Image 1 (cartoon, helix red, strand yellow):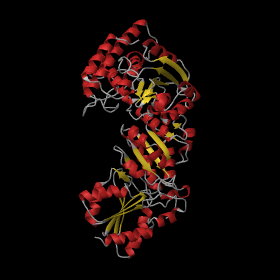
Image 2 (cartoon, chains in turn cyan, red; image 1 turned 120 degrees about the horizontal axis):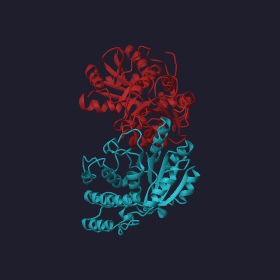
Image 3 (cartoon, helix red, strand yellow; image 1 turned 60 degrees about the vertical axis):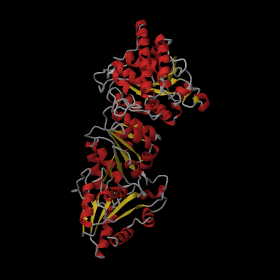
Image 4 (cartoon, chains in turn red, cyan; image 1 turned 180 degrees about the horizontal axis):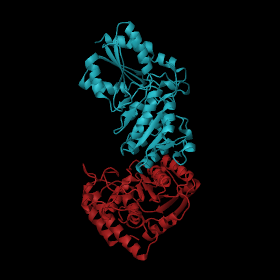
Length: 281
Length: 311
């Protein structure tokens, strides 16, 4: 069963897991020499909560028809998802070292035909919510009670298709669909507010017929609480989580430079030390 | 030859029949494509409407298919191939989803609605996508057989249909064999006409005219454009030594290109590519537009004769 209730022990356990995933993210991007650390680090606490607590999944049966679905619509943050899948037991964590290599199961953007546990391929921004809506409609058609979670970037909602999907999800009363906006405020060339303003974001979703809940997305307790709240809503629900791009590594935080850049060896050691100390709340 | 049904209506009608005994869902935009607009009333719960939003229609179809549903997606071919181009490519083809895209209102036959609605580039676009299969019926009979065959097809499939009624070329004995060309007529061995789609009737008429002028042809119906029946192309080149292709689509990247790509590399023979030249559709009587674009019976026969002169 999907689990929305959590204890203090769960919070502590998940915080520790998120530290592990942050280390994995940094290592694999450094090893690959390319990738997107900023958006992976902002998203990773939510991804940890979903894969290690909330979602009803079975790593031994990645194609189980009744599993909860997760679509990383901001597909460039896949190092966070790959780390979660590996640590959850979908594949050997040693494979993380092959990120972006030729013939690796870990492509530069998620590929459902190559990586066990990826519910749908993504990478081209703006599409994941539509795909998730299709899954949610299928669940209703067949009387299945699985949930579909779709994580979008805040820059991503500049894509018009996101709003086609938002309109349709409300129209079809897809209350088994939860969107999560990783609002880290930064996109590749700078602040979202400077490039294309999206606020008032909550009002936009409400106007499209969605229930909205907001949380601090790098705070495990708040993340778990928001997921619980979203599940109780009788409409498609969106969690707008306020995060920091590059969260956990001081020199990466809130800096668009780290949207798509790999750390040097020296930077990696500094970053790992910071993450290990666990400045994450 | 009496005009019966448009290929789009024949396909849709058959699909409505098949829905009684087969499990599939229909995803639709707000268009009148092929009579599937009432699918949801007839089969409650099995139609999903997405309004005037083709990108969402297409990506959501991919999501539905990923959960094991057989999905038919119906909209105008211009929108399926261009408005939702990337969704077809990245979310249906790259992920190999079991979605059949029904693209209607193709070619210059659209007539009245004009350039915005006449899909001339759709074959070229869809053909460029890995994992895509493309079928195109020549008449109402073959459209019905294709609808049936599509039920057993797994994977991304594009079915190209026309707006207006056309004469039936086939009778009920016709069997659609996916991936195989059909030899429709044989009046001699001077050249092969390889046609795909509703212009087949014009090819047959042109063959009659050519016969009177002493030129005999093979006519092949290439109902599967991709993957191409290369054996049939090879045989056409070997047996007749010249190939004329015929399609109601731009000659830049369509059936003619597919045949030429293969023939040039494996069995080069003189070729003529008859189809839409480098231009858009426009409003008007389709027959007049065909005439002015060099796609009527007379023009086909003329191109065939000049091709023979190059043998």
